[in-house]
Amino acid sequence: MKRALVIGASGGIGTAISSELSARDYEVMGLSRSRDGLDVTNEASVEAALGALDAPFALIFVATGALESGGQAPEKAVREVTADAMEAAFRVNAVGPMLVLKHSLRLLPKTTPSVFAALSARVGSIGDNGIGGWHSYRASKTALNQLIHGAAIEMKRTHKQAAAVCLHPGTVATSFTEKYAGRHTTVPARQAAANLIDVIEGLTPAQSGQFFDYAARGIPW
Image 1 (spheres, rainbow, N blue to C red):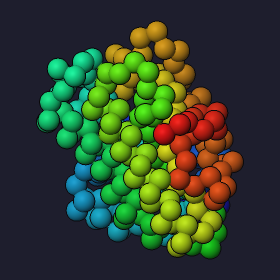
Image 2 (image 1 turned 90 degrees about the vertical axis):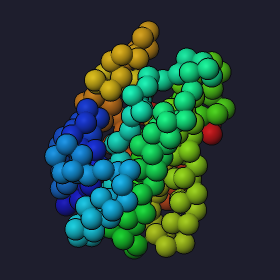
Image 3 (image 1 turned 180 degrees about the vertical axis):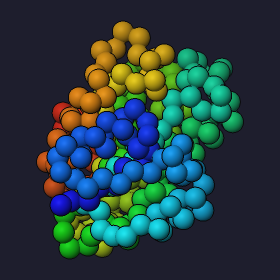
Image 4 (image 1 turned 120 degrees about the horizontal axis):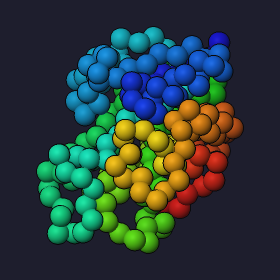
């Protein structure tokens, strides 16, 4: 039986991902802030939580993230940007997943296939940004994409059968997005989770370091 670790397992997408993996006969372990006290922005917390786990995991899925950071909603204009909100967005959306990767490398097998997947967002694409706004959130997800892309290059030397990727789930109907969905078509968390696991199960090491949507379509950086 394959083992999977879900970080942020108590959130809307994290819960759905855990359920979908269990339905596909994975042995699932979940960690979250609300249930386990895991603070992905605090390296000591990440190191302690992941250091207590035994290897290997065929999949490590990071489902953490925040649209609102530092008590501020996504900016509609440059004049609304604050240093505090920007820093908070980077800590949750970029620093956190990278710290998880740093301390979970030892949990990924070196001789068999594995996947490290981080939940990103299409708005983090520079090439796909045609309307502006949401500056802190966009930039933090762009930073996440770069971090995972760079880490994937390094991982090719040590984990030759691994794929490290960023994934865009679409606009998922959760409390995380309900205030911002607007006219966007939303997808239930259960369906989003199934879509993402389908993408993950189709990955090869040659696709490591890339950015995909819920239908396995590449997204421009």
